[in-house]
Image 1 (cartoon, one colour):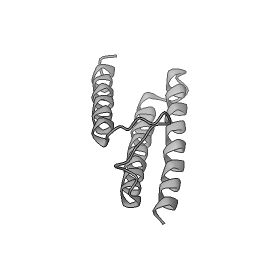
Image 2 (cartoon, rainbow, N blue to C red; image 1 turned 90 degrees about the vertical axis):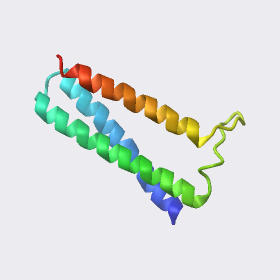
Image 3 (tube, helix red, strand yellow; image 1 turned 180 degrees about the horizontal axis):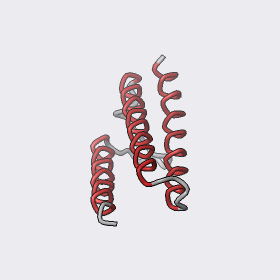
Image 4 (cartoon, rainbow, N blue to C red; image 1 turned 120 degrees about the vertical axis):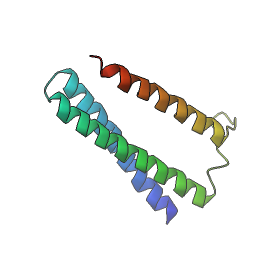
Length: 102
């Protein structure tokens, strides 16, 4: 059951990231107004983050979250993943703040 939920959430994550990139391109080309782009990008960000959380919860329920290994056999911890996400969120926050000046 959790594997099915995880696969559905991965599909939502891929779709929302694709839409996120598509709306970003449309905003660069100024096809969509700035306010509409902001609303759509925040919606896509919320959907993608929610699906990411669902994937993590499903992996934890399956018992696969704490035993992550790369293809070359090296293991990495969930702490590194969380730290990387924190860094990415911080960079996105800085980009959001600096985009208000333009």
